[in-house]
Image (cartoon, rainbow, N blue to C red; front, side, top):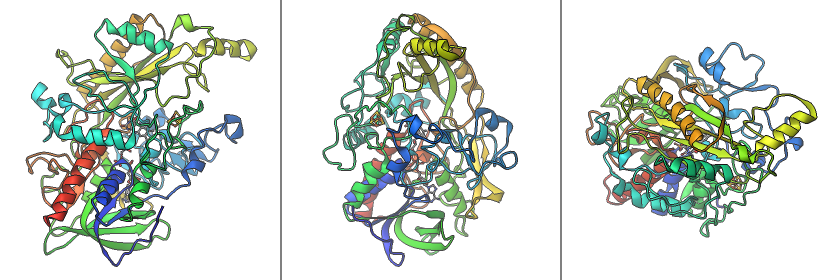
Length: 585
Ligand SMILES: Cc1cc2nc3c(=O)[nH]c(=O)nc-3n(C[C@H](O)[C@H](O)[C@H](O)COP(=O)(O)OP(=O)(O)OC[C@H]3O[C@@H](n4cnc5c(N)ncnc54)[C@H](O)[C@@H]3O)c2cc1C
Ligand code: SF4
C-alpha cells in the first residue's frame, strides 16, 4: 500500500475529517471518482492485529483479558452517580475508559476520558480515537432502514420526515453490501428490507425454539445480519472471510478483518488508487472560511504528539468525525460571517440529538438443553435479531415508534447468564450443565429526535489539546420510558411463549449514550430554517461543506445506524464528485 506524506502547501480537492465508517466511505468514493483527497484522523494508526489478538487464550493474557490495574472502565453506577468529566475519585486510575473499554484488547482503542472530557448531563459517550474509529470494535449488526423510518412523521405525526425515501437509498445499500459483505437471511419484511446477503450463520437450538415460539404471535426472529464477509471479497486483499474461529465472542474486533472495519474495508483500498493521503495524529480544531466567498477553505489541525498547529487548504471539506464530534467542529468554527458556528444559520447544529434506548431484556434457560454436551457457539459474528413489531400495522396506546432485540444462546468460552451459585467442583459442574442452555436478549428502541435534546460548547472545560469540550443537555423522556416498560413485558411474554424458564428480567434503562448510536446533530431537510443539510448531506449555508456521518439523520429509527451512515455517505459523495466536476462547488 502506497503511503505518502501530506503536502500542506498544496490545495487538495477534498479534506475529510475522521476515518471511521463515514470518513472511510467518503475516502473510498471520492478517490474512486479521481479526486485528490487528504484524510485527517485525530488518533493513531495502531498495529491493530497486535491490539485485537482475537485468538489469544485468557490464560496467555496477564490479566485474563481484563484491564491492567492502573486502568479503570466506568460502570453503570459510576455514570449515574458521578458527573463528567469524572475528575475526583479516580486518582489511582491512570487511564479512565468508557464502559466499553473494560478489556485489555480495546484499552488503546477507546479514549482516555481524562484527556477528552465533556460536561453536562450524564452520558456514556464511547469514543475510539484511532485510524478506523469505532469500526475497529463495532458489534457489526448491519440493518437497513425503510420508509417506516424515513416517513415516520407521515405515519404518526411526530417530528419530521426525511427528505429521501427508501428508493433513493436502496441502490446505495446494495453497493455497500457488495463492496463490504454482509451475512443474513432474506425475510421480505417491508419494515426491515433485506440486503444482498452472503452465507448466513446458523441459529442454534434455543434460538430456533424462540423463533418458532414467537411465530404464532406474528413476530420475526432472524439470523444476526452481520457486516462480515462469510464468503470473502475478491476485490479486497486486506480482508479474509470469516472462519468462525471459536474465540471470536470475546470483546474486541476481528484481527483477520472478516468483520468490516474502515481501514481494511475502505481506506487501504482507497490508498491503492494513488489519490488518498492519510495523516493520523491530526486533531482538527476548526474549519476555515474564505471571508470573500463565505465558502470553506480548509481546516486548522493540531499534531496530537507535538502539539504544533497546522493549516491545510481544500476545495471541499467533508466532516466525518462522528455525530457529536462533527457538531462540535461546526460549533467551534465561529467567524465574523458565521457567529453561531459554521452551517448554523438555522440554529439547529447540536440539536435534535437522538439515539437508541437500551437496558430492558430477559435471560432464560431452554430446559431441554440442560446437561446436553457443549456445542461450539462462539465462532459466529452474532446470534439473532428479533425485529420490530410495535407501531407497524397497529398503534400502541402508550408510545410511538418501535424497538428490536439482539440476542443469542449457546455454549461460549466464558459461560454466561447462568444463575448457578456455590463453589468448588459441584459449582463448576452445574455451570457446565447449564451454560449451553442459556438464552438472553436485550432491546434497542428509538429515542425521539427533539430540539431540546442538544449539545453545545462548554465555556470553560477544554480537552488535552486546548479545544473546548462538548456540554450535554440530553435526557430520555416519557416516550422512551413507556417504551422501555413494554420492552420488558414483551421480552418475558416471548420467552414464555418459547417455553423457556426465565432466570432474570431486566427493567433497568441504561444511561443515555449506552447504545453508542449517536445521531441527528446536523439533520437533513428541505427547509434551511429547520435543518442543517440538504438530502445530499451538503450544508444549506456553505455549499462546499458536507457532513457525512450520523449527524445527518432526521430520526433514529430502532435499527443500528452504521450501514445507513455508509449508504447515505456513498450517495452524497457521488453527488459531491459530480458537482465538483461540473465546477459547482
Ligand atoms: C462496541 C461498539 C459496538 C457497536 N455496535 C454496532 C452495531 O452492532 N451496529 C451498528 O450499526 N453500529 C454499531 N456501533 C456504532 C458504530 O461503530 C458507529 O455507528 C460508526 O463507527 C460511526 O461511524 P463514524 O465514522 O460516524 O464515527 P467513528 O467510527 O467514531 O469515526 C470517527 C473518527 O473521527 C475521528 N475524529 C473525531 N474528532 C476528530 C477531529 N477533531 N479531528 C480529526 N479526527 C477526528 C475519530 O478519532 C474517529 O476515528 C458500535 C460501536 C461500538 C463502539
Ligand atoms: S466470528 Fe468471524 S467475524 Fe467474528 S471475529 Fe471470528 S472470524 Fe472475525
